[in-house]
Amino acid sequence: MKLSRYSKIWPDGVDPDSVILFSTGRASIVQVPKGRLSGIETGNITADEHLILRELGLFVERAENEKDGVGRFVDELNAGDHIFAAKVVMNLDCNLACRYCFEGLRKGKHYMTRRTADDFIGFLKNGLAPQVKEIRITFYGGEPLLSRDLVAYISLQIKTLADDRGLGYEAYLVTNGTLLTPRIVEELAGLGLKEAVVTIDGPRDIHDNCRPSKVGTGTFDLIFKNLRDVCGMTDIQVGGNYTRRNNADFPRLLDYMMENGLTPDKLSLVRFDPVTQESEGLGPPGFHDGCRNYNEQWLRDAVVYLREEILRRGYRTNRVVPMACMIDIRNRFVINYDGSICKCPGLIGIEEYNIGNIVKGVEDYGNSHNLDNWKNEECLDCAYLPLCFGGCRYMKLVRDGSMDGVDCRRSYFDATLETMVKQDIKYGMV
Amino acid sequence: MKEGIVVLSKGVEKTAAATSTCCASGAGSVRK
Image (tube, rainbow over all chains, first blue to last red; front, top):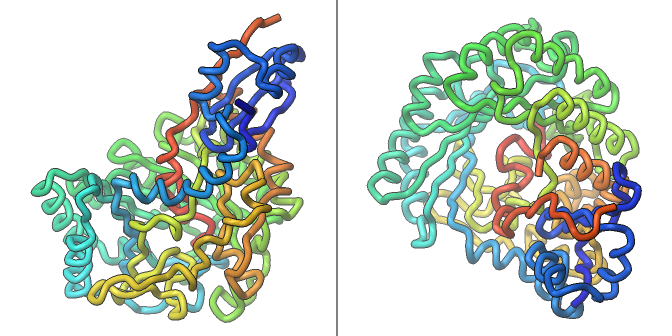
């Protein structure tokens, strides 16, 4: 028996006589007296300790087999996956003119038709393997609520299908929030809406600069009012997209939410993420403030700073857990408005990365998407592999013009993971 | 001083990795 290579040991930070052990493969955490650490590292422990650490993924029977086990991790996820999930791009139109929108020049008056919606429902029916127990649909855009009637139509069809077959159904909306009125939410809540994910980019002055309407007016007050009106009707997640220049101001949004009715009990999650720099010719012209690499120094600082600001006010945020890319999970799709299929929202409308369409089905994408890019000695040796699995292929594509290789996040995790796990402990996110 | 191991978190099942993809609940790495 040996300590898993996919684990980290850090000083406790609160108790100077203890250390913290964290499993990157399971997100389990234990506190160990310093005097017991050498026994754990050499396998010289009691039978009870042995049992506890093995159950938590911190101990392995044979170290030499562990890499093989992690190498099979994604295959096992796919084999045991009981979810069919699709992001459905209802249109590529929008009533906002966000300065950084990754869909940039891909946007236009492009709307999914009723016929394409019916073809999608047919694709879904054909894709429901016996192991599928749950259907999750995320209505995406553009702005999905510009296609409100079709969102309701698809929801009804799928809810009926799920009910007939005894499956679960959950619907999600990724929306800018300007059209998220109680009337719409009431209608969609009856059709399976579980959560609306709404973006607010920091306090009013920053948000209105980053996410103005098409005629240049501010949108903060309208979105905020809508959120206050609907937050008891469905789960609400607030997301915010920051840059190197404006992230330090985001806590002002949290204060505003606290003081104006969007308190932690009203929101399912708050998460802030960096804006990704888009490729020239695809993203909005003139925007150059996006993040190109998770290893950028400013981003490490911003991630732990904003996470602390969110948590210390009592909001929930995403905790540190093993994470696979949707490209790696077989039953995850992005359905474009025209019925073409891709594997990541970043790849919408890039013909080279379409993997089929809802009429003809899905083609093999193993080579085109470099599926096993992380199955190399360097990644398999890395303690962070289960949190990363090769990083973001899309970011790699934008940065380097190709998905070849991996988007290594080792130095990012070196700089942030200890703090993030200790935040999870401190704020009870475990 | 504490004597033994204290479990602070049992963590998540392996299958959670399939539902915690970067794009699972939000716009993911790409922002719009």
